[in-house]
Length: 384
Ligand SMILES: Nc1ncnc2c1ncn2[C@@H]1O[C@H](COP(=O)(O)OP(=O)(O)O)[C@@H](O)[C@H]1O
Ligand SMILES: [Mg+2]
Image (tube, rainbow, N blue to C red):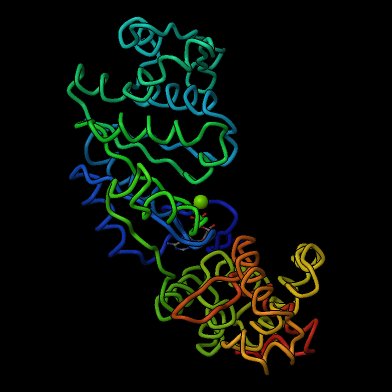
């Protein structure tokens, strides 16, 4: 049996990557021209995949440009960040591990990194600093890529995923100033900083009183359009010797509101159930499977919020827009206008809803279907 052409759960950058032509061109042009770029979208719309694809393209074409990709999701402190950053920059600087080991004395003046290699040098290279020294001389690390680039006549593009996580470090405010001060002077290093927490990212980059204001170009990544999904789904079925009814190929992105992860997931479930041709029967089962698989999570999300927050979510599900009008507040028991505004921020911070074209909507389309079934007994398929 053929492998599924639909992938979710990991980034897609080659196989299963679709569309994003314009975004690819723009991001590539920016980064090749030294324009720092910030990429923002809710999670699972495709930032990491896009960056990975652009980096792979650049890497293939120009060996003098070194690319570094670091996910800050699990990096918990300034020290850990600096060590990871130094390690990855050194690793990217050369394809020969022998050169990594000499970088300590070549590129550091005050800091003395402890470098070590395991049995497999390419995967077991580690680096650490004395943390007291590191705190005093962090600019040596923050300028490391620039120093290496100048000496070797190369360039770096450094991509930091889930960048807003830095804001949770102790002493972040000082660190933020230091980062900006070092990075803005660099001529041979370009940064791509991206993240899923839109309000936090905006606060870092759009606030005139913050150091990262005007650090570069901000791209708000949009969803992939419905018609692109339809042709991707149809072609992927055909490419694996299966067929899909055109109506069903259209319903998949519609039901999942063009959400990248979920379109792939629903397409995968449907594909998996299909022998020859996907029809409404397969889609129905696939959709139930998908929602059932996620329902413990959805259950938890609703248990973790207060009554008035849940009520506000109901109002969002019913496409209400005037939350503070007396009628809406009474109908859904939303409390006072102050409660409404506070709860709105909480639901946004929890990534449950977001504002789009002056309306609020669920961020997670499958959670929305589950929610409407749970609280209003609406059928999944009816809701499109
Ligand atoms: N360009 C794309 N083409 C097809 N599927 C995509 C694309 N971008 C993302 N996806 C789907 O969405 C999922 C989440 O993408 P990811 O890049 O991890 O998003 P983010 O970094 O924004 O959270 C991927 O696992 C994949 O299923
Ligand atoms: Mg990501």
